[in-house]
Picture 1 (cartoon, rainbow, N blue to C red):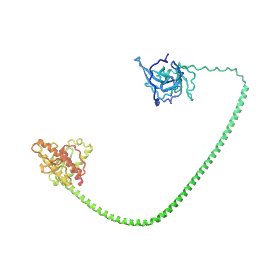
Picture 2 (cartoon, rainbow, N blue to C red):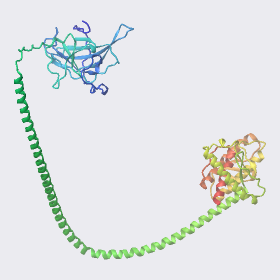
Picture 3 (cartoon, rainbow, N blue to C red):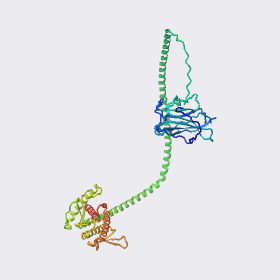
Picture 4 (tube, helix red, strand yellow):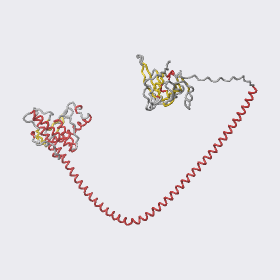
Length: 526
């Protein structure tokens, strides 16, 4: 009836728990709560334990096994159907009529707000029988009534309980359902007393007696305090003397230990001195042998020093010979680039005067090429190698005033053949001066030069000039330019020069490589 209903008929019960409940979450901690909770503030997280007294029913004859489940119910306003979700299941209490289930360790609601709570208790007479629903109660937490507080020793005596009484232990006390709790017994009435008969004189006498006794008690307290102070001072002095005596005793024991250790050390040293004297007598002949060996080692050392001096002199001569060879190579390469000057031209490059004679223009060409290489490399480093972002137009290069376009054209066949002949002769002479064996052998025949590909068997001859058909000659010339680029990379690595990035076409990149090699050799020769 009302919010609490009971159903005792048989129905299908859920499976009994077989695992312990998990730990209580930290956000449900109620340590900060104190005092009696307000009814509107009671939440499911405040529930700590559920008790039951006087299990009675038709099927219950003696002690039984029992457990309970706690569910939350919610009803949607748009739909008449209600939803129930289980939020906690207790352990099994065996063979009892007054079950006190263990504390609720983790009881987390599925929803923020629930319409009502459902408590279902299941029982069985023995392990061979099935579980039966013994009791079901639908309730609101705010409708529970406060029964008694929680004492330090425990819950205390719950008093007389009716059949199937359920107690809910919250953090501030024990609560119960209104219909289950019985009214407390009335207290005994107080004994009636007659009127007090006392006079003023009796009161004054009692007051005087009390005042005298109080004065005597205060005097005794003062004496006691003074005696306690004297005793404390005496105890402090005694403690200080005891502490000093203990310190002296500890120092004496320490000194005794040190004295014993010194004695032991003295005995050990005397024994060691005896051993040393015996060893000294034995080591005299060995010392003479060692002196002889030291003299021999000194003689050998002097001989080794002479050999080292001779080797350093020879090494210096060899180094001077290598430096002479290196300087001779640099001179020959600088003369070679005076014969075949590579000049950079374009919107961002400096203008160079045309070279009329080879001897007069060699020094001017080398210095201008070095300055142009510095400006080009600085621009490339500031723009991450993007030459097109610095110059309005891409630069182009000339060798002895002849250009080498990226795509071979029929109209420029003669100029391309001449420029490739210059490049082939320049690479061939530079490799000869530096002592580098090229991967692709170059055969210089002026404007009719060609490159030999020795990788294939038989070797292939790749011409560096136009032949009968212009269409086939373009692909062949591009292949030859690629071979010359690989040979130029060998020369750069032999001179320990960083390989430039391939940001131009084939012809322009070949002249760019020769330009970098020329500028670096000029700076090294200076």
